[in-house]
Image (cartoon, rainbow, N blue to C red):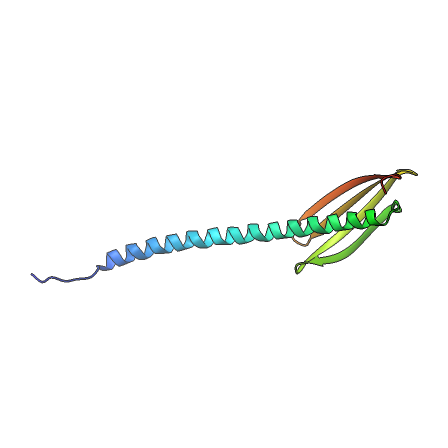
Length: 119
């Protein structure tokens, strides 16, 4: 009887399939992680831009005029649209809503009510 060393073709095929399944699962997990990381980066950028916009209104030290403005902005290489809406209830009260969206259908909205004595 000859003593042959090595693997049979069937063993190599089964091992290859197992390795392929494991690698496919790793690739799927990595792509899900990258998508989640990208979404988190966009959300953080949008929240930062909205907070900066509201801080700018507070630094102005006067109530903003009622109306709507929109402007493009970018942060960390990502492009956003910053929309500010100011609605007046009376001469001393105004609601300011800042909505920041990216092209990836992400949108964050902050609303703040200002009173004449707030600023």
